[in-house]
Figure 1: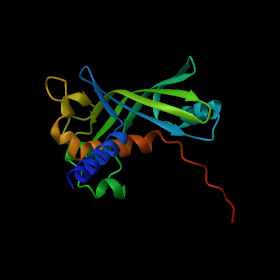
Figure 2 (figure 1 turned 30 degrees about the horizontal axis):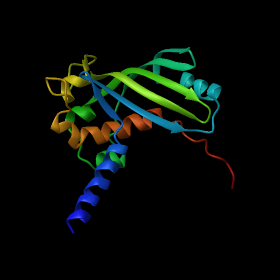
Figure 3 (figure 1 turned 90 degrees about the vertical axis):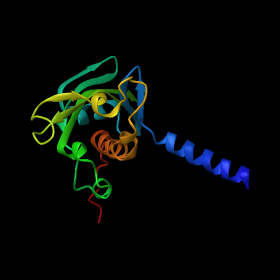
Length: 173
């Protein structure tokens, strides 16, 4: 019985870590995810270039390097609304630097220098604060316990929705 409990706990832990797109290295938070797609490298570049998500956008050494415009969290999304999100998460926007690595049939988004951008309710409108200020311990070695509860899940959903290329819908009847 003891081994069964240990095995279940280990499997659960591995599954949770497999879904963890956030890393903390030397006090800096990075979010990373690989996406499968049927689009070519050129189509991926074209999609993100015309998406309106980015202020600055350049392609260099087979990678897209861009600055994300402030993006709101979709409070009406059922997955997010159902979690009773903390005020800071839904009353501020997120921005930062994005590097998109391109390969055949997939692309990898690395989101770093993540910023929380105030909307005037909790943080002054337009003020940019490092993500780490709110979600990393002062020593920079661990995420705050409060981050691991709801914000981590909500940001993971929001970042994923932001960077996932939507599959084109066919007009087949």
